[in-house]
Length: 349
Image (cartoon, rainbow, N blue to C red; front, side, top):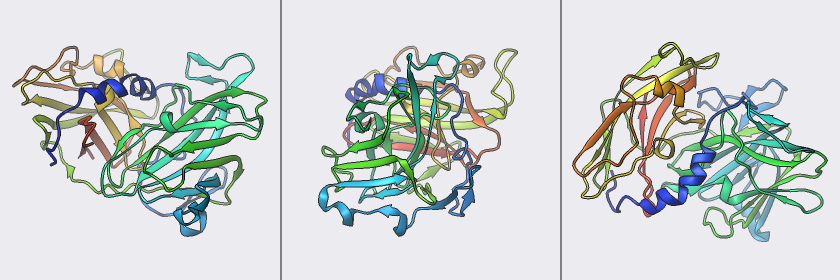
């Protein structure tokens, strides 16, 4: 385990507002084609008959085409760089997200299912909210909105071989035409391209996918991970179909409940955020934050209301709503180190 740099409160503050909003899970899933926990490269067929084939040299825009510093691809085509591969797999529109979020008068939400893979041998940072936007035929630009879908795109630190998969949401006028999704990388050393443009009006003949193959140590329940005096332990995991009388998962879901302990072996008080630092993740790259109602129904829930004092530890459970039977399934703790990113993975099943 790497122990080169101090736990950074600066990163916690910088990411706090963004991750708190982008990481919230709720509403209805806009697509179920990525919900399977499988990581195989076998081609499958979605409900619309489109082949879900893995990326190949024929359907990817490679860095060899980067002379213009720009790459334009269709929906479903992979863009490959030295450190990162990405594909926008599908798009849909809706006027409502979940029970409470409605588009403004005359507007609609454009929901894009994005997959991004770290193909390097080190941790990198990627955020759709910092680097993407939509642009229409009238050159009007739209920034991402904090729309809550069942699987919002989870940016931040990506481990080697890790895939982040989820929805990026934009609010646009219903009559907007010629929408393109733009990624600007001029200030990031992720691609030779300064800009990647995805033409949402054109779809590849086969929709490519990205397969997650984690190139990091995978821990098991009972193991601990440490960095700069902060130790995270997953003591065990259980699964429940109901918690108490009030907390029930959505139909087809179950509660996966890891038993977590964080120990502060530093000489300063430690702030830990379950929302920013703790995830459950599938083998395809879908992420889940802790379920508020389920976690509040636990007898020994993890409490984050105050800092962990030097030399002290805090232990408790968190409940995550996950599709029934999905595997592999990982618990992730992000140490939130600005200078030297590191996340630990525990395989729960």
